[in-house]
Structure formats: C-alpha cells, structure tokens
Image 1 (cartoon, helix red, strand yellow):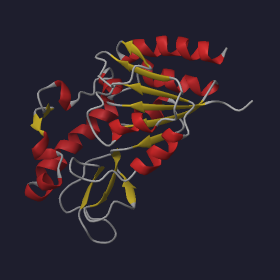
Image 2: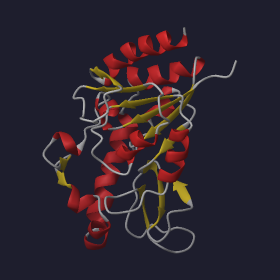
Image 3: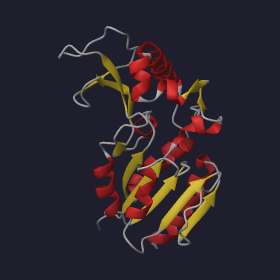
Length: 230
C-alpha cells in the first residue's frame, strides 16, 4: 500500500527547543544583532566582515545543538508516511534527527557559495573569512537566503505542497513570505494541522490547532495522524 504524502513546513520554533533562538523572540534582534546589519544584501556590501562573523558564530552554535523530540518524532513518522520536510531553518537538525527528505527554503549554514552566484555550493564546517574565494575567484559567503533576496527553492516547495495528502505547520509564525504562502497551496479538503505555542491567525477554520511547543505537540500530532490512518 502506498504511503500517504505528509508535507511538513517547519520554522524557528522547532529548533528553539534545541537552544537556537530566533530574532522574532527578541524585538527584531537576533543574538544581539539588528537584522539590517547581518541578514540583507546591503549589510553584506556595507560590512561583509560583520556578516561573516555573525554566521560563523551561528555555525558554531548549530554544530553544538542537538535534535530534539520534535525533529526525531517527525523522522519516526517516516515508517507510516512519505514525509517531506520543508524548513525555513538553516540548521541541519532535521537531517541529524533522521529525516530523509528535507528541503531548505532559506539556505543551509553548513554550505557556502560565491557572492555572485547561488550555485554551486561548497561544504563548510569552520569559519568563512574575507579573502576565502571559490574556484572562480570570487569571495565566498554563507549559503543563506537573506531578507530582500529571492527564494530559489520556493517553486519546488509549492510543487511538493500541492502533492500533499496531509499538511502540517510546526513552529512558525507564518509571517515570513513566500514560505507562509505555502499554506494556501495545499490541495482542497486535505487534513491541515498547525503546531505552535502561539497559534498564528490563518483565517482557515479547517485547520486543527495544537497549541503547544513542538516537542510536546508532536505527541498530539501523532495521535491525530494515527486516527486518520484507521
């Protein structure tokens, strides 16, 4: 019997319980930095050294973090469902938690790219420094989709969302577009769930809301999904 396709959109809330904070928790500051200073193309042009230092710090932070029960719980669902993760997160906690199909909308902290071209990407586990260049001779920068930049993977995310038999949102405020728009790309009539400690307003009365942190909500989600399988 073919497994149902379970598509899960995740955001910063799922990784927050692994100790990775989000700027939206602290009045627009991310680890003490203003987003305008570290996460826009203008910031890169103005002060690439500061931007590199910020993401080098983030890379070390992610390397020390561990997948939590929500990451592992989603991976466990692969036994019953064809699980596709679409994440807004730049960390690799889904992969380390065991998920096999993960699409990163906003880039990956353990990859870098030329400042001129999105691809190809190169693996990075240490720091990126000014003067580090790709084979084409241009400065390397984090493989991160910054604010004000296009989101190259959104078309693939839309395609995957339109194939969903069940769609779940976990740990996102649904405030960052185009990712938030994926909820409106789901096939009509499919089961929809949202797991968050602060349920965002969606305007959709058909969504089942699970108001809990991701690590707790995953248990309730599994119960709902088990009922759907009967």
